Image (cartoon, rainbow, N blue to C red; front, side, top):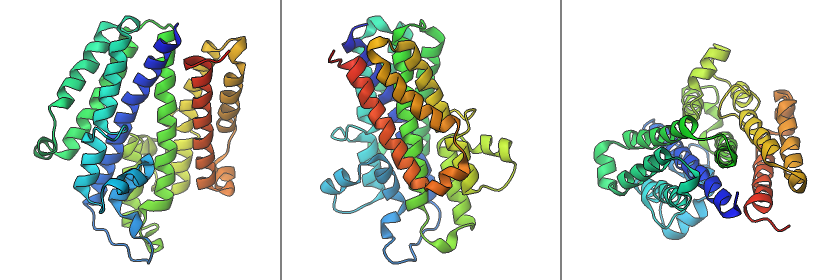
Length: 318
């Protein structure tokens, strides 16, 4: 396969997954913003709910360079409709559709038609229409379009190299997002230490689980109150949880084992090392090491793995 084709397929999948992740993050933020909120400890005003999606996505600096004050409308406009923000839902769907258009011969007609119709429908949205439709309803639409695309891909595509690069892009993006959103809960969502274990804390943990479609899974596995330790176990180490770090690394490592040859064994080794840490990891050791430190190390390593994938497959130098 040509490097250009592999690159477009990989980033097409990443952009679709990023649009869905952004929709999930905004949806949980919108729902949490409807709850009473008051920062009662000095210096914690930055933990205002609408700062969370910006912090999680690494967009806070870019946002404040353009907007002097934080507001729900500005964050929604910036992360949904802003053509100048490459991580906005608008830009992600546009980039995914352009990638699909440039490699139409490598994907099925159903896949292209699905992405094209999603992009054409997205162009018809402005902020007033989103408000009239309902913010949560629009974000659900984005998530359903992503689900539909994955379903069409799984149901129609030949299991060849093109399919593997799509799967690789999806799970690299998903792993990065899960690590970021879990880390942000520990550091920015809770306005007061006095709220730990209280109603606000419960709603925030349940909202976090819903943002990664993990609330029902948590109830089924643990049948108990929501605790940070068990949420960390579910979203980091449980390989039967589709959006956990372990599950994502299972897919990534398996795919790289299929794609790698003698020239790209270093990529396979790097993914195998990261996969082994999750496969043989224990929750107690993670908490002892420091959850924030563990998650930030994972984000750095998954980013480095993405760079290695880019060097080896998408822009090879050998």
